[in-house]
Length: 302
Image (cartoon, rainbow, N blue to C red):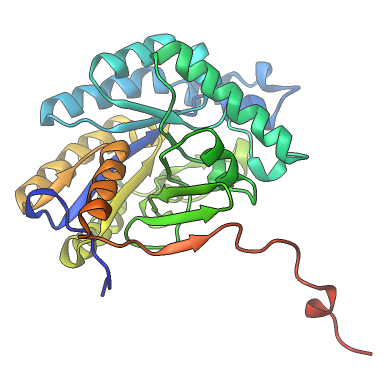
């Protein structure tokens, strides 16, 4: 069913990355800038990242995994102890905006560039190296995002949902690898009852959420796909959910032929396969549309 599967390392049938977006309370301050300081209950929920990240790191140590954490740079400045713990364990830190701002809500290309560069500066200062990957806050990849990422030397983006395996985004500036995921692998639709953000879904039991995630895993394993979880410590790092995550990792390992990797490692493998001629990814020019559709597309003649 996948026409162009990647030859994963050591004969693996699927590449797995359990990535976490450490948004903490950035989203509260962004959505409620005048009142966030008063919203103590919401703060406590979102600042649970301070507990959850360390729990997730312990889980990764238990299974010998190295994974990718996406950080809004403001959160790195607020919680430097989490940055230190992630780096100490040898994980990748990637770019997730400055304070979780939406690229599509910026007034101009230069405004989007400002936030991208501001985040780069923080990551470089706190980790000692420039970020290699980016995920747009809210998945809001804009018409300018690919160009800006290429100009800043990023190797990959992990915001889009256009395939089951890595593909290439091209612009006049060059190219960047896209590592796609999709909403079925995001934990927000499964668990996120957060009325402060107009999210009032019915919270699902961990076993119910895992049925969704593992159905995607089984299909990716069967057909040679890419499985990237887009999770959040304050959501999936809660005790029962994280405990169920441990069982999920055990099940994946017992299945066999699974390559657990950081997103940077997956990007490097794609580059090696392209160089060796064993994988030719699909190419998608960016932006998809250069301007809005003509008005007559939406109007009734006469």
